[in-house]
Length: 324
Image 1: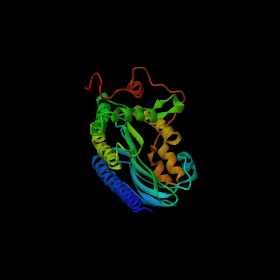
Image 2: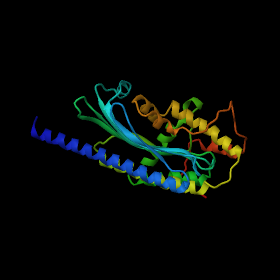
Image 3: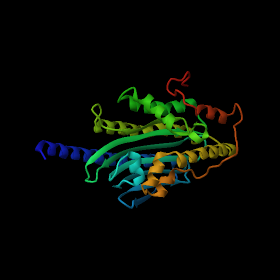
Image 4: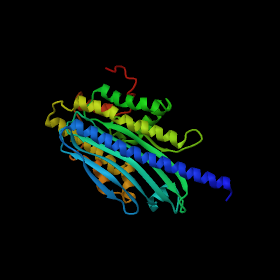
């Protein structure tokens, strides 16, 4: 092999290893920061931590919180898995005899008080190799979205605006594009495209190219990961002590049923984890502790519940007529 090609391959391998290691360090630090903040605001519950190994390569660190003053159930997990790409995934990617590495942080928090929204976020990095271990492909993905049961309009605006500010530093075209992706992805197609929540941002398959390097894409993911607590915690602080009734909890459980449906039927992360022999307990920690289903239920016209259903439709949360 010519020396200049060998030098280029070594540089690429070193560069890729750097991005992978930096991303892994980032998600582990972010996990610590988020868990610490959640324990502080809850004031009672703490995270249980489990370290697990994946048959075939890699493992993760799952943290679960439950029965708190604020958080009824939640999980914040990181994982770094690798090995032979399962055949079902190889077919999806259109490759054969491939190996992979996937690392990421994933969290879902289900608060006790129905006036506090459920929240979901994940940030991940994926590498694909040929049978000789040479890098063939790599990409970033992630995002965050809010699933309220009751909502003040300005709180929805705050959540979206925080991620818009994080995105704008890398291009003002990104937030509108990734908000639309989020609106189109987090829907229950079997429920006439009913949205799971009010969205946020969602991006996937962001690959390095001539315009954006892996470092650029990593910086973008990092900025959005670091925006998560700024987007969510002020809403929790504002709503966690609002008095609620059994009727409020019943509506919360009903809407949580829709959350369960999306995660088990449509969520690509859930399906990927199960198809790659991930740890089932960690994958399904996103499910709420209590959910319910009711036949052909419709909220009363003019009620807070009916207003929430209207706000589930895609809308401009930044340029509202009244930002309060």
